[in-house]
Image (cartoon, rainbow, N blue to C red; front, top):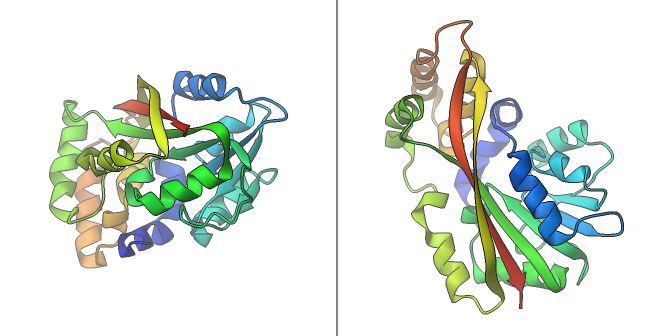
Length: 245
């Protein structure tokens, strides 16, 4: 695991409060595409605090959440006591062979886009099982989203990102999975000043900053929204469906 993931240990509470879920249309497409229903099993890998996990439960399928960080697993178990939560990584999930009909990875694959991870994902999927990679992508043509980026970009450093496209190169070269289909949905997240600060504080590189740097940065983020005002943060959710070969 990269050292930058240590930030998520520090920001589990902010992650739970500040991160959005996923648009119902995107989740329903995953459920339908994978045929999730009672008798089926879906693994939500790198589940975090369970943002996607809780949306998959209503499918009736058995949902198993795999998450390496104890702080994240704790928030997930508090929110979803009925869901089985497993300590594991993408390269070593600890799950049996041909265990899952589908695997979902939300907001995380760019952290572990390697052939080792793909071999493990292929191992735990049934024949012709499906892998769903999804991200909520901030719409940077929105003035508020652009202002957030102006404040945070100087601190990104070498933190892996969806936007780098590195993960796509890994998937394109792999002989273990083939892209079947992709879908894109737009939605907005309503936030007040506190939730906006939580949203920014939940990013790994912000959480890793020394407090003399982090606190002023979050103070500037707070100034972007007046007290008592709720604003809408626009996103596009990108979902990619890969079939196990």
